[in-house]
Structures are given as C-alpha cells and as structure tokens.
Amino acid sequence: MPAAQRTIIIGRPLEPVFSFFSTPSNDLRWRPHVKEIQDPAEMRTGARIRQVISGPGGRAIDADIEVTDYSPSSHYMFIVVAGPARPRGEYLFRGAGPDATSVTFSLSADLGGITKLLMSGQVQKSMDGEMASLDTAKEILESE
Image (cartoon, rainbow, N blue to C red; front, side, top):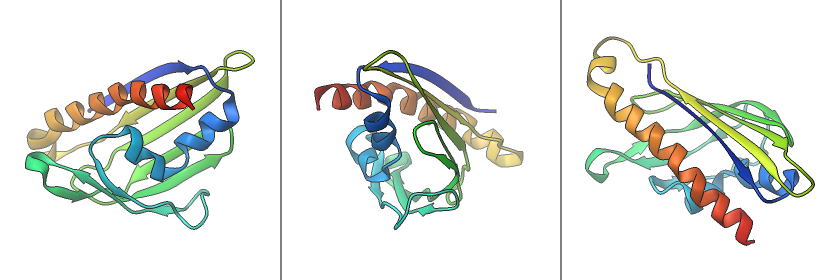
C-alpha cells in the first residue's frame, strides 16, 4: 500500500498556517503537479473540491477531493473521489512555540487488483513528491 508521512515545523503561528493549508487555491502555489483547483463555497466536512492534476506525460487527470473532517486550527482530512487512485490525506496542526506550528501530512492509498500492479510505484512516487513539496509551502509561509 503506497503511503507517506512527514512533519515539518513552520515559523508562523497556528492560525495562518492552518488557513494556508485548508484553502485549496493555495495548493497552486506549493504543489507543482496541480493544474486546477477550486475553493468550495464553504470549507467544511463534506465539502467537495474540484481538482485536476498532471498525470503521466502531462495528461490532465481529475482528482476531486471530499473533505472528511474539518476541525479549524487542528485537523483537515480528505479523500480523493475521482481519478484512478483514491488516496486519503490528513493534516494535523499543533502549536510548536509562540510563533511556530507543527504540520504533519499523511497520505495513503489502498490499491487492489490490476491497479495495485500497474500503479503502486507511480502512486508512491507522487506521494513522495507531495511530501517534498512541503518545503515550498514552508518557504512561502515563512516569507509572508
């Protein structure tokens, strides 16, 4: 099962860090494979987010998201509901000092059958890329 997890410390208070990660349109700034993403009318548990990512050969792939838990300032969880792979993701936010926030980002995907055989490596590579992109998010947040 492809999976990845990473924790980073961002030198910014909890509220702006949570707001940055839970505003989908910000993903265009730090997730390089996101081609399109739309903020929902209201961010909440059950919200749907339209997303298109760059797949193999630069092909556009629908990868819409459903928010499965939204707890302001502490937790944001989602599942991908469109596309060939349907990973689950989770962000956990904790204060790490007066002006610092710990962000833990986790991804996992249950792949079965032919999808597991054909896509496990590519899905794992994509997840590893998501974890590496956290450095870009940190740079953006700490420079604002």
